[in-house]
Length: 338
Image (tube, rainbow, N blue to C red; front, side, top):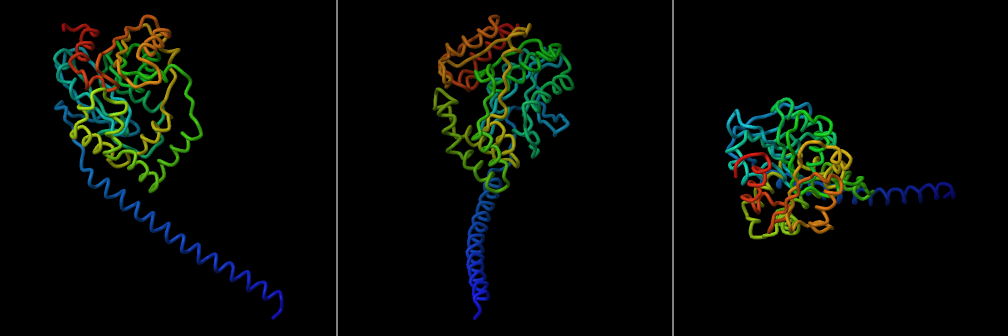
């Protein structure tokens, strides 16, 4: 047999052997992806439907990128007060369940689920800082349509500060609950963070990774490590509600942005120039790289007029751990009798 033909046959044999291995590997990978897809579907299906527990007037705000769910409670002629939840696994307006009824005795309380969370729409889009800045500003202008007292938890406080600086006529006062010091410094998105965002947005693998990150065990661990000073408050009811919220369809898209730190925003210049009253409320046991005293000093250095309140025996979820104290701070600050 000519050497050329032998060479071709050898190459063909090599190619065929490689093809058989590739087909076998593809079958394994395909089977694995199929198994992950089934796991993802079962996880979403068994999570069940989400419902509100706040017992207010349920409404929807048709925004440009999707409808937002919100509730209203309190006298129509009362001063408007808006509660904005923070970010985290399964985040939603549920975090204000111990505050709405009390605050509604003095205010017209608006409490919303941000786009991508809770009972609001969860479009498969890239959630950015500007998404939430625009959303909050549009909601106050189009729905409330009055100067508003705004209470924001965690990172979302940065979007409120940015809005208040750009459109001060929409705001009366601001309360920042457990604000991170990251909102006082330039965001530093690492390649690893960018990779996380890309992975979480993948159809099957991304959904699987997200499901692992938002399992009941992971949610319990998240709150135990940095959410609550008193672990006894991490009830089965709390974990189950957050788990259900985290596993509504398309939840991973907003999560991909906050987990990758893409939603961090530096507003130290805007905060320094704000003329309206601002109160910062911190839990004494809040988990941060710095102590609560250092966090307080960091905010006061930016704006010495800030009113800083520290709540004992509380961490990041201080409005849930010490609701009576928190409600009194908000009511006192906003001019209601306590």
